[in-house]
Structures are given as structure tokens and as C-alpha cells.
Image (cartoon, rainbow, N blue to C red; front, side, top):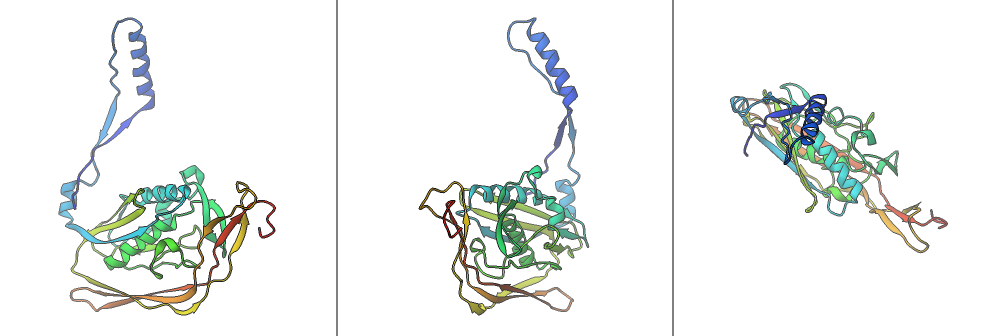
Length: 292
């Protein structure tokens, strides 16, 4: 891992406009190009590379997920959500609050409308796909051995997330992902994504106190077969056309067990239970189709 400091810069609109206006005036009086110098205020990083080295920051854990095949709105929202979390710091003893750091999930904040699971059904809302970001962060925190006081499974299995039990649903006002920083040093979140490969990765950096982490999954129990699909109308479909919006998935219960051992402390065991209801998926049909 490589740390690099980056100086910030700010351009004052009024000063920039004045400089451009003056350049336009000069351009009318002389032949040839006119150079414009914009007044820029430079700001040194609050946390420098030297500061980070003094904190003895190290890579604590990472998580990955795959969003290949996602529609454009979902890819867009994943990028916007990950960018909101990227570079965020959590103070020692503080709690990383996903919903607070993401802020309002709305069009005004750059999110696009997309399908979300809410209230047991699939519907269009701003920010569809944001749970890919929370799921990836949950996996990083899980492997880093950090306390996770709040995490919610999705109501149904989501094909994008792979192994059941490693997802984290978020929804403003009711479901959040919270991770406590007990490393004794600032905690840094970094995200990176590859839209061509359809991959998202979260990494956590803090002080390595020598803890070891073991994560184990259990086979799905109480499995229930997926029912038939639900149908919704899509105005853009012609007669006889259909479009698969969401894949079916069986229901069941699974348990992820994590054991965290820290030098000089008692071993801590955390259990993350996920219960999924059977889901028939959703198929879009054209207007006039009696199934819609």
C-alpha cells in the first residue's frame, strides 16, 4: 500500500470571472494569444503522509463484491455511494455510520432512480444499488475484526452478493450499517471500483494491534423453494416482450460466525444471523398484459 498526500486548491468564482473578463478585454487590443492566470488558494492536507506514518496505520482488512450485469442506474449509484465513503476517517472510539456518511440518497445528491427492495416488494426509488456499497464495507469490517453493532440482512437473497450471510442492507430511517473503531487510532475507509470488470472493493486502515480474525459460514438451513415470479408493467416494452428485472432465490437461514482474538484479551465470538424469505423474482411485461 502506498500513501500520497495531495494539496487541495480552491478557485473563487468572483475572482476567476474578473480575471477572465480582463483577459477578454486585453484580447481585443492585442494580436495573438492572451494568458489568463486564475487566483488559486492552496490548502495543505489536514492529515499528511508523515502524520499517517506517526499513527502507525496499517491495512486491517478488505472486502470485495461483484456487480457484473448491473443496469446503468445501479452502476451509477454504486459509484456515487462508494465515492461518498472513500477517504472518510473515523476517530478512535468513534463509530463509522454508513447512512450518516452517505447522506440523503436522493436525485439532488447525484443518485438515480432504480429498483430497491423495500417493504417486501421491488419498487423504484433513488439510489437503487447502494446496498452493494454497504455489503462490501461490511465484508471489510468483518475481516478486519472490528465491532459491528448494527447490520441487517436483506429480506431476500440478492444474486449480486454471492454467498448468503455476507450482505448488509441499508435504508434511511430503518436500516443502517455501523462499525466501531476500537483500534486506538484513526480509521480510514478507501473504496475502488472497476466498472468494466464489475468489481467493488473496500479497504480499512488503522492501527494493527495484533488481533487475529477467523470467519466461518454455515450451510443454509430451513431452505424454502422460490415461488413463481411477480410481474410489473413497463411502458417501454412492446406486446409480447418481457424483461427479467430480478432473479428468483430460495429462502432459508444462515449464520456467519466470527472469532476475534486480541493479545492479552479474551476471545470474542460474533454471530451474524441472516434469514431470507423465498423470492420469485420480478418480470416486466408490456402495458395491457394481464399479468402486470
